Amino acid sequence: MRSEKLDRTIGSSGLARSGLASLALLLVSACEAPSTSEGVRIFAASSLQGVLERVVQRACPGQTPAYSFASSAELARQIEQGARADLFWSADGEWMDYLADRSLVDSAQRIEFPGNALVLIAPADRPLNLELSPGADLVPALKGGRLALADPDSVPAGRYAREALTYLGAWDALASTAARAPNVRAALRFVETGEAAAGVVYATDARAAGGRIALVGQFPAEAHRPIRYALAPIRSSAAGGELARCLTSPQARLELESAGFDVTETVVSR
Image: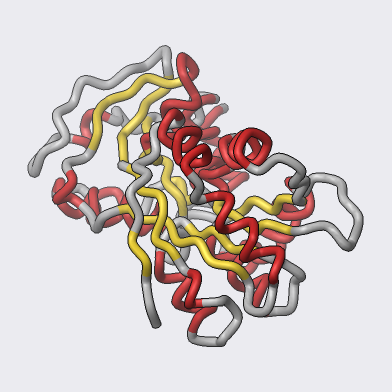
């Protein structure tokens, strides 16, 4: 039954490309906090949901922004299509580059911040014992179940996951049956509910899930590109610039660090 439900949700080879944009629109609308049209709006990667609200509440007193959480790919496309936003917080630099190349963000205020790690998780009642090193027997460890990950064709978490699985030597065997989710939080939910036998998510997502999942292990740093988020105000948004400075303040860094993020940063000039 779980396998049938998963197939209905994502299809035999992943979420249909034709439905991805529509689903993302629904995700953005569903995750937005109520606000007036004049409010400051943050478009942020789904892996920041939960912690970002706490950061703003504790480090940015007086700020009451509206939030839109979805995959970085869908948020970038929304901004390109004219969605009103003041700040974009992407899970990687590529989608920030996408907007910078179109002069839609203030590249002078861009920061690569924070960092994250990648882990393999399993349902809490079906833990896996596996060492994440080249040649790891991941396919037999799944016992016919499916591996959940964010869509590697567009979502940063999925791209990192594909790199890590390639490092293990398992990607070719898993690519056709992987449960491709629209964002990393959706991949996490497949594992939490037991619809997938394992999943590749950010370390911070696994930490937030707590006892709802079993941590198998963390991928070696050399298994994938460094995971660096990218933060920048939307071009000509004074409110976005003010919020960006707040979100990189010492108090904000403490909050992010307590959630498991690496709070070192890199300033990027383009």
